[in-house]
Length: 86
Image 1 (cartoon, helix red, strand yellow):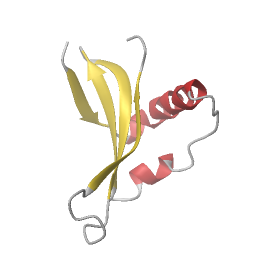
Image 2 (cartoon, one colour):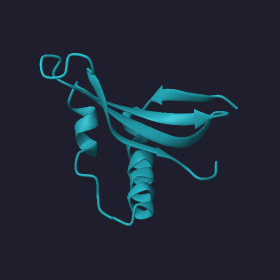
Image 3 (cartoon, one colour):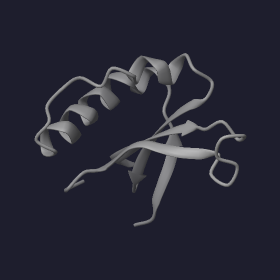
Image 4 (cartoon, helix red, strand yellow):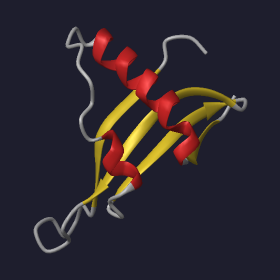
């Protein structure tokens, strides 16, 4: 049971949208994530699915930062979510 990251592709977009809804519902802040489309347009944004035993168990949305503004931390996690049950 080792978690793996898999780069999400455009056909995963609806799945990510559903996972984001669950994520925000659990936070008690239901809303639509307005930046999701950007992860397939902006080369500095990277969507990943978290999988365990080849089953989707969550996601992580990663953004590249300006290396001049934050030289020691070129990547940032915009959103991160792991399902309670897989």
